[in-house]
Length: 508
Image (cartoon, rainbow, N blue to C red; front, side):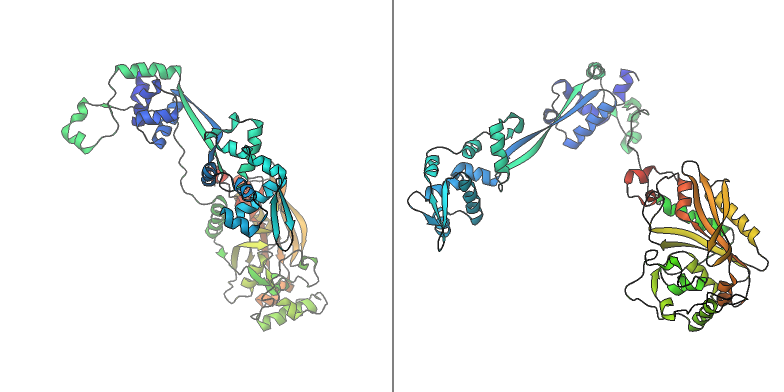
């Protein structure tokens, strides 16, 4: 951009400040000369620097000033000097010193500590504590204490100008209440660049009474015909504007929900605080299964047990565990009815599926899904959290089989993880047979487990539905799916509070 065009593009604040940069480079002087507010002048300097018209330099120096007690002690003398003077005639108790000097208990305690450290007093404990002055203390009364001399200096004083001896005194006074105040003295200077110097010459020779905005009066009077308008600088750096938007993971979850609904699935829901019955027992998971260990789930302390489980359904599930149904022999153990009432934080989303299968509102044929927050003990790292989101569900229909399940899993990987590199491998779950796991290949993280799936066992379906019918089911780790979609390598970033990260994360 030519100097002429650059001059015509200056903001009113820049035009107001620019002429004074020839006279002074000090920011404080520029404020006086321009009569501008500090925020206006600083903003103008930053804009000018962005246009390579000035170069801003900032430096910071620490200075010491007298605080309220510092001003008082400078005039009246330090409290330790007053205390010494009170002891010239005779030793005194603490109470007598207080009455004689008028010092506060805090000032007396500090003074006693300082004077004792300098061997200026002797403290004797009899019926009461008695303080007496030493010969060294009497000698110090005839000369000014180093701290007193320091307080008589001209303040404010730059710390970098102090000697080591003065710095030691300052450090001691800083520990005492309201004697010194340490401040950061910031110095800002703005030097004209060669471009800035040339610009001022053009600026001084021409009339730059520019119009910055069109008003009603200008339009009505047609005076705009004789006015010169400020140029728009399309290359100037402008601050980024971050519009409000939905949190990236929340947006992803909503997108998953929309896709399932568009495929004709019905959404299910269930409580976060579950019982062993719905979370495990109704799924034909035996009560001695290792997943029930206290380290795998979070049990509720109070109330420990539920009182609202349907008794008839509990008995049907109990029978399935003990003796089996539909030709099964069950697990052959004594089912603990009290234990099945125990409260636990939902460990997987399938607890919602079991509730729906037992519901009178279940439709056959039907396809259902749920998005659920689950809780399970785990070591937190880049791919694991102790609380996580799962999307799961089932399709119930006569004649459905494992081939249908494989097709659904493949669709999930392509639709939600946007990859066709998948593996479906055999697996084991107590409530499905056959069982499978879905793996998908991430470009950076390699093969990642996405889902567990299978066909619900008759021992689970018959007590809940009331008849034997095939049900294919799955549970997908949504957190890892989101990592695929959002390009995130650390699962903890799904819940990040880092403002820069939240502003720059890609949208899906």
